[in-house]
Image 1 (spheres, rainbow, N blue to C red):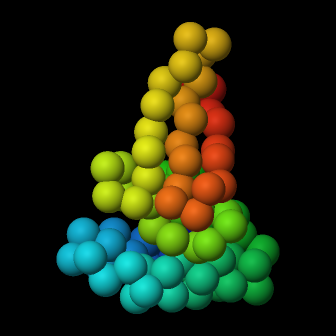
Image 2 (cartoon, one colour):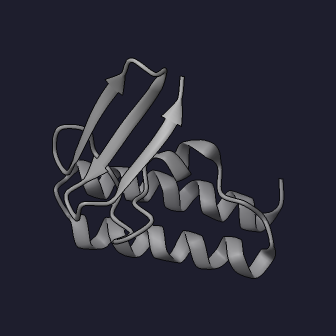
Length: 91
């Protein structure tokens, strides 16, 4: 594991902690910083991190707090952020 990947993992933990403490702006900064680190070092973000970060507003998504999660009959999960952005994942 490279230094960049370790830093991205640490930023993911910090974003999760900040979002659970209702400090959404700090969590948003951690998400932005992790994306910049991944972009500079040409390594991708982990799947768990991508699933819980909004692509539009960089918010760390917390189900029931700032995100709505629904399952659909077509075999996919729909995640909607408070900003209105929607993501769909198969399950």
